[in-house]
Image (cartoon, rainbow, N blue to C red):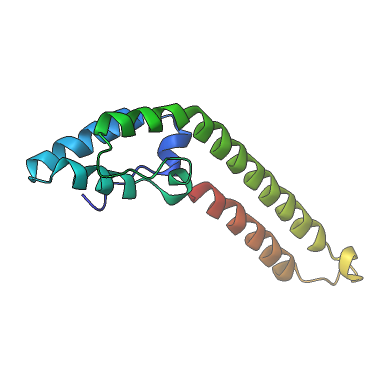
Amino acid sequence: MAEFKYSIQDAREGKSPAAWVQWMNCAGKALGISQAALVGMIYRQVDVELRVNIDTPSDDTTITELIKCMESKLELWKELFTTRSQRYKEDLDHGAQRCLRRASPRHHGLDPKIYSRKVSMSYIAMAMDAITLDRLA
C-alpha cells in the first residue's frame, strides 16, 4: 500500500479523494489492518503538500470523516496547484526566452558572421531542456 499515494497531480486533475480513500480502505481491510491504523496509513499516503490542509487524524477518526475532510479541500487543491503550475511554466518560458536572447552573438559583442553556430545552438538546447523538464514534471 505504501506506493499508492494521493498526489498533487491527482488533486490538480480533480481525481476524487473519496474514491482513492475507499480503494485504500478496501485494500487495507483485505490485509487485515485495523480501522485506526488504516486511517493513519491513508493519511500518510497523501502528498505532504496536500496533507498540511488536512487535520491530523486521531485514534477515533473514521474513514468517513477523513473522506469528508479531503473532499472539502479538493477545490482549494485544484486551484492552488493549477495556478502554481501555470506560474512555474510561465517562469520557465520567460527564462528560456532570456536564454535565447543571451545566445545572440550581438549580446556577447561578437560578430555574427564569425560567431560559432554550435555555441548558439547549445544555449538553445539548454533552454529547450528546461522547457521539456517542466512538461515531464
